[in-house]
Length: 295
Image (tube, rainbow, N blue to C red):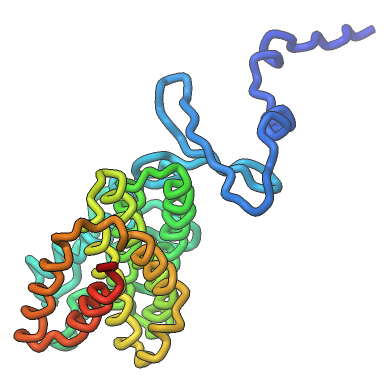
């Protein structure tokens, strides 16, 4: 008669329990708000957690949100930027860029290999991003999008500025280096939102430091960037209708009463300088500011 197999008690007891029920029951989901918190691992590393209706999303506080380091770089964006910088500095579009010694790793279906050489014309960029590489950039940018929304809820404005500035670099890279037009335009519609969130974080950071003048300056720069964006896509009429512009205008109106009286004189000076320089767009913004300050 064969012996009954012995239960692997100690080894089984040491295994991690994959059931999340206890975690989920300890942190209830609240509809209509971003449920976010900072947690600390046993080794002291901090992570962001977002409570969703069906689970918990965890992201690294710094670096790439999923904690990966493609080819040793902080992100795929940084990796691509290094290849493009190298090609523009040394190759000048005259030949293909050598593949790094490290074996390329997979990012979904997009191998992390140098962008294609584009030596057909001296005026062209030396490299072009394939469709697969553009998809990898977009997917990575979504991770940073989720993180900067959570960071804004935590009022970590410095990191919101970092992540939104970083995602604007993604949009610039796709616009300048994507091989196909559809990839150039695939996320162009998100520029208004990223620009607004960055300006909002800059203004909030300035207000936390009790600098209303700097806060309004950040908002003005954000609205000017939004105006340029809508002009560049041939839809200037969308500027006033934009929800992003309305958010920044609302912030600005709330800040105006907090400005010192001397601010009015400085605004008049800036308005005069803008008119002399024929920067009528800025002059219009400054004139609106002056009119909104109570006497």
